[in-house]
Structure formats: structure tokens, C-alpha cells
Length: 139
Image (cartoon, rainbow, N blue to C red; front, top):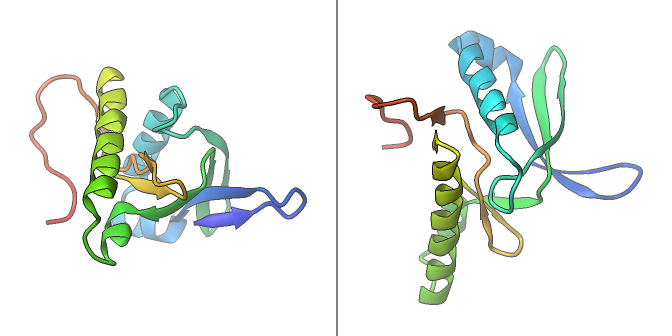
């Protein structure tokens, strides 16, 4: 979600997770792994860094060094992209995934106001330490 800093007016992307949902689903390990992977990666154009994180009784929040405008699936909800836009998005996804590959992270995706794809959802990411026997994502 986008949030505005009350003093400076700067806009930030804030990733917010419900503490109750995480605990009810027993996903504490998943959330911690995502945090650890995100923080272990060098910030780049494709993987924004974490400026700060906060936790209270209701939410976990991470302030990212990007202004993400929408997820890729919400961008496509309006209909198919024209060829030029599709090529631009595809090239950005490829470069972002290549960045992760070189960091040995198996990797979801947001699109900035300028149309660049950035990888921010590391809940299902993992370090490549050998063979993987699991699948993740939406069917």
C-alpha cells in the first residue's frame, strides 16, 4: 500500500501483514524467512531495499525504497497490454529474475508508476541450496 509521510509528504510503499492472520495460519516462519531474504539482498532497481520495519499487536509493516503502483495481475485486469508495453514488462521481469538468480534466490511482482517491474513479495522465495520439490503461487 502507498503511504504519505506526514512531515515530508514523501510517498512510500509499505508492505503490511496482519499479525493475527500470520499467527492463525502458523506462518511465522514464512514471514521471518521473507524478511531475512529481503534484507540479505543488495537493494537494486529491481529489488527495493527496506528503509524500516515496525510491529505492534495488529500488524507487521516494512517501508520499502520504492513507490509501487500496482501488482502485475491488477495491471492486466484492464485487458491485455499492447505489444510495446508487454515487451517492456517482460524485459523488466527477466532482468529482475536474473538479479535474483545471481543472488541464488528462487523467487511475486509490482509495477511502479513508470511501468518498471519490482520484486517485493518474498513470502514464497527461498535460497537455492539444491533441488526444490515444492511449487507456490496461484493455480
